[in-house]
Image (cartoon, rainbow, N blue to C red):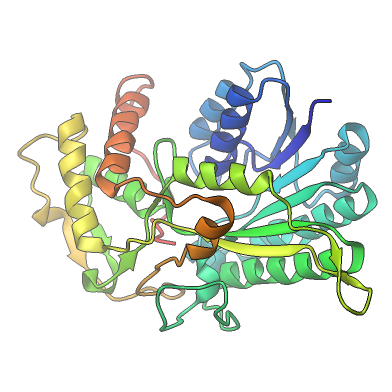
Amino acid sequence: MCKVIFITGSSGFIGSNLAKRILTTEPDTKVIGLDNMNDYYDVRIKEARLAELQKFENYTFIKGNLADKALINSIFEQYHPDIVVNLGAQAGVRYSITNPDAYIESNMIGFYNILEACRHYPVEHLVYASSSSVYGSNKKVPYSTDDKVDNPVSLYAATKKSNELMAHAYSKLYNIPSTGLRFFTVYGPAGRPDMAYFGFTNKLVNGETIKIFNYGNCKRDFTYVDDIVEGVVRVMAKAPEKKNGEDGLPIPPYAVYNIGNSNPENLLDFVQILSEELVRAGVLPADYDFEAHKELVPMQPGDVPVTFADTEPLERDFGFKPHTPLREGLRKFAEWYKEFYMESVSYTHLTLPTNSLV
C-alpha cells in the first residue's frame, strides 16, 4: 500500500527540496503539500519551486495557513497521512523582532493544530523543524542535544523550543512518535533571500554595501540543503519506538537531533568564497571591488557569535553526517542565481528582507 506524506511549507526552501526528493525516488508515495505562498520573500522563487513539484502526478498542493484549524483537520480527514513533516513556519531571527505576530500564528498556533490533528488522526511519525537557534548564547561548543536550551535570545528561538516541548507533551500523552530536527544555517540554490549568502549577493549585484555583523567575528555551521534533505528522509523512515517503562506506562516516543555540517566557517572566509564563486559564475565582474562594498558592524539583537553542531547521535542512529563543502554548495547557488535572476527572468533591482545569519 502506498504511503501518504503530508509536508507543510512545501513551497519553502527545505520543504520543496524534500518533496521533490520523495516524488523522484518514491513514485508510489503520495505527497500532500501545504503552503500559504506568503510574500515574506520573493514569491517568484516559491512559484518556481511549486511549478517543479506540480509536474508530478502524485503531488497534491493545497494553499492555506497552518493556523487554519478547520483546514488542517480537513486535510487529515481526507488524506489520512502516514507521515507528517512540519516545515511550515515563519523563519528568521531578526524578522521575529519586528513582526512577532507572524511567529505566534504560524509557529505556535500552527504547530498546535498539527499536533491536535496527529492526535485525532494517528500517524506513524511526526517530523518537525526545530532550529540551532534554540541553543541561544550557549558557550559550550559543539552544541549537543543534551545541552540545556532554556535561554533563547529571540522570539523565533523561543517558538522553536516551545515546539519541542509541545511535541514531547503530545508524545507522552497520546503516544505520537515525533522527531524534532535542529537545522543549522541551511543554504543552497533557490534558498531564502533573507539568509546571508543570498542577501549579500543581492546587495553586491545592486552595488550596495553588505554589513558583516560582529565585525566578522562570527562562525556559522553552514549546511547544504541536499544534506538536510538526506537527513530528513532517513529520520522519516525510522520513528522513535513505542514502548512502556518499568512502571508499565508509555515512554514518550520522542527524539531530537542536530543536522549540521559540524564545520563552522568564519564569516569573512565565507564572504571571500562567496565572492569568488559569484565571479566564477558570471554574476559579478572579475574586477568587482568587494572591499569597497563591505562594512564591519556590531552584533545584531538576537544573533549569536557561533553555531556548531554535534551530529554524533545522528551518525549513530542513521549512519549519516552532512558533508558538502561550503565552496561546492556556494558554487551551485551562484550558478542557480545567474540562471534564475539574470537569464530566465527579466532582471530588476531586488528589494528583499534584511539578511539573516541563523
